[in-house]
Length: 398
Length: 203
Image 1 (cartoon, each protein chain N blue to C red):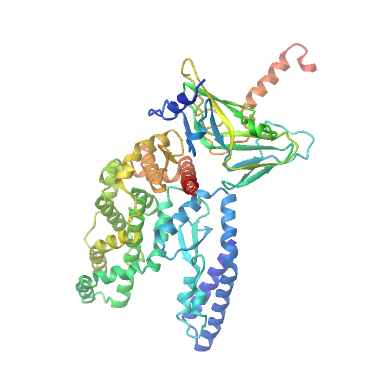
Image 2: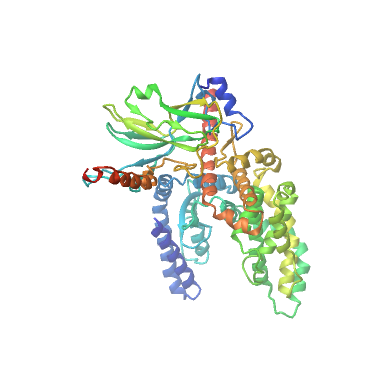
């Protein structure tokens, strides 16, 4: 199965590479190859998901599947047929297989596939890549939420919504940047800003959904202390941390963040903004400031109340932390199943506290195999409790 | 021994150090008159038949783990031996201890679920179940089915040496294979004692 996905990716990458230099005749050939790849996708997709689901179940990776299904339900209005794939590189990512072809298709006018063929009964096939060396890392699950956010951005056109909302306020910044002596050009600059905006939308979605769990996972996963590069497709890590901290405080998480003063103090310190060193940097940072409130509003609207609630977490967290300290998977409190992002956030605070509330405790928390195992088990058990209750209510109503 | 009211009180004890933990408890009715029904988990360990004439139980286990999705059946054949685990994580405080017993309805079908039945004070984890079908027909074991029962006693004095971090089976989340190899130093010592006893070397 892994070979199929790799073959799909390599053939798509080859077509993309050849497309940029192809003559009109060669583009016809590429169009046929693309059609062939699309047909392959149509053929193997119905077999892909059941196979991967079975494999995941047999390997006991149910907690991860629970999270993926929840992310699809919460974030993706058009749904997705999720395929779990272990990735050689140490990263989390998602790839909508059909859309990745559609993007090429639109550049090949001679390619002809009926529009109805792009419809998928069970949602578009989306591959969820998780690191194969550490697939069961529960503490990093909020990073997966960020990656699924990219599918949400596409499905609901969130990036364009943000850009449209702040277009007027961005214009003076564009004008100022283009008038600088750095030779900046409008299109590449706009394109880079759009990429940065997409990233902070995904951060906002993950932060609203997962609460402080996303902040801590990002602090463990991203090189937050590095300055980053101004021509990157991703905003500086420190900017992402700063915006995430702002969002969480804005959402009422201050009391919870204050429970880890060492880590939060470190993140506050690394996310202090320096004076911009170039017109490009000045533009991008200014544009992030303009976009940030719109990003938050649109992320909240998109999730329509599905985010983690600080008050709910505060009610549960003492019990969750005590259970984790005892080595108990915190699946159920007072007879009720615990929401999975509550479990992950509590696990982060537990590990940070146990590790001395320092930057090192964040890295150690991500690497703690015992806590990761308990959290994933708790997510699995809590989902079973939830389904059990739903089926009981169904019986009672029948 | 704890009856229904005492079991309920122990399960709801606010102080986690004194609480009897059985989680998740899908149904309050699992707490019976004098025991708590335990469900079958999803993970199993299967021993492969040995091809050599002898097998050393002190060598690390090579049992194969497999997972049966919650709510689906796993058949155990007549004469077959499997290790399973409880669905619930059980945490025993220092002043309680427990015993895992067969449920009568299953025992009548020929299923034995537990032979190492004592749950020590201080133990925490999913309980490994030694599943044996001594009946004449294959039995469908559905992951999540109520398959065993836990009876609980209160100690006269809470133990000061609870089952802990240095023990062989710490906070497992599924069935654990035998760890007899941890007792190998004792085996060697027994051998040395035997060798030094009069006529010991002739045995």
